[in-house]
Amino acid sequence: MAQRSVGLDIVRAVCVTGVVLTHFSPFFLPATGLAGAFRSAVGLGSFGVTGFFLLSSYLLTGILLREIGNKRPNVWGRYWARRALRIWPLYYLAVLVVSIVGLITATRVAGLPWLLTLTYNWVNWSDTNELLGHFWSMCAEEQLYILIPILSFIAFKWRWRILVGLIVIAPISRFLVATHLPYPAVWNFTTSHLDVFALGALLASFDYAKHPRWIAVRAWITRSWWSVAAVVAMALTLGIAAARDLSWVFGSVASTWTYVFAALVWTWLMLKLTQKPQTEVTSATRAPVWLGQRSYGVYVYHWPAVIFGTWLGTKVGIPLPVIGIVLIAAVLAFSEFSFRFIESPFLRLKSRFSRETVPVP
Image 1 (cartoon, rainbow, N blue to C red):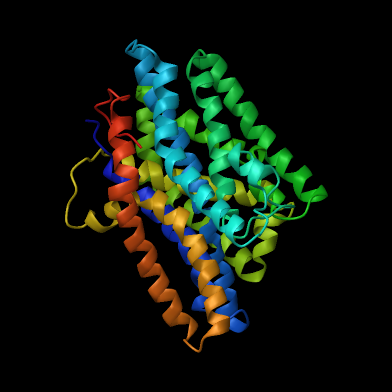
Image 2: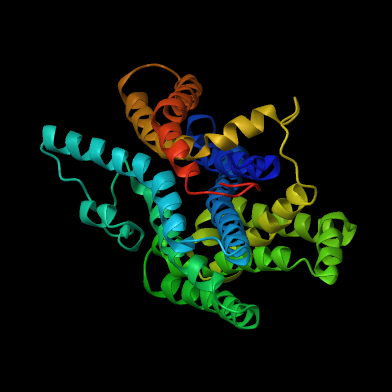
């Protein structure tokens, strides 16, 4: 059975916490005044999706490179089997439930053909599904999964050039999309995240090669005060900008650089938490590891809870903070149930397609 990386589970926990705090912030913070500015800054938690993209690219590229290097049989087939068993069961179960609700209530399920074909992120800006709008990120990630095995089989000198090309293409795409299409097109399009995806694959390639110079640079990045200062400066820049206008950060041409800043902050955090590989859970890491392992379910279920809570707040006299706390607790509880009884059977089946003895997703 493959071991899990404590550091990567902590990264998952931070990613999903940011997304949940962003979407639940209206339950706890007003939209005006100083609290409104803080609520807008909290909206940077949506960049948790960027962290997920980086982590997935880094982890899956590393696994494939090791399997190819060890000459494992049927690398492609086992790769796709693992991805399908991890993502599809919960994804399509949610789509099925929403579709059944639509049939019962005679309500059109927006974006259904696109959801079924994992291409919903291209139309979410014009055909938004209220309950599954957040599924755009899973669709984009599934599309990015196609590139990982292709790049993994390419010689490093060519892989490096292609990855650098993707890093260049992404901000150009964001500029063009932000200029010509309304938000959230620039946030949802797969091409907008090619740079963070390429960055994850590039880091995995360097880690796999284990060149002494890279090992030294990696250690310097995680320990140097200069790198810490740079990360803090980028985070503060994003925070100040978001407090003034969150839509400017995510939906304007400023996305050409704001997304890069977010990706670099996540890169530093991931490198920091994986500098010393750790697979044993301690009392200090038990809670974030628990959340990281259930982050997929939390992500899937939290947005319908937000929609329900918003509706409930207009129908009953219960204070919004109380509704928010109860719903967050309910999401965590249901995610635990989902992990044990829905996801785990497929995860056990997925483990049959992995011969890794290193951290896996």
